[in-house]
Amino acid sequence: MLIMIGTDGTELTSKVAKRFGHARYYIKCNENANIIEVIDNPEHDEKHQVLIDAINNGVNVFIVGNIGPHAFSILNREGVKIYLARNISSKEALEKLRNNELELLTEPTVKKSMHKH
Image (cartoon, rainbow, N blue to C red):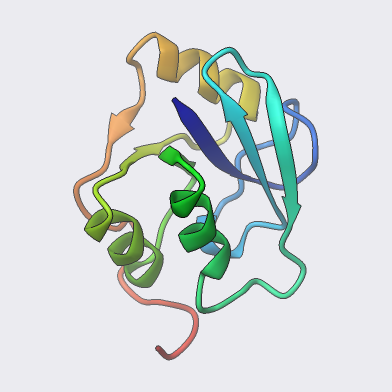
């Protein structure tokens, strides 16, 4: 299983970002919390190409603090799992994922996208 977390920093001690599609960084890791890659997102890619690339490279679980309709639709149509984790570190989110303590999302948590698509 490959997991991507939108974060405020580059370490697993970093908080899960409040808005996934506009996270400052994405951490790609495995279920054992081994970091595979840290992706910088300085421009907050409104087309979410980073997410599409992640799916094409095997990421099948995404952990979000919130997610808007555009990013959600991209992930949802690919059949990946999207879990909600708010106000905790990425490491804590991974622990909660392993313990089945995160909510599996079936719809976006934010009603409007921040950009026009």
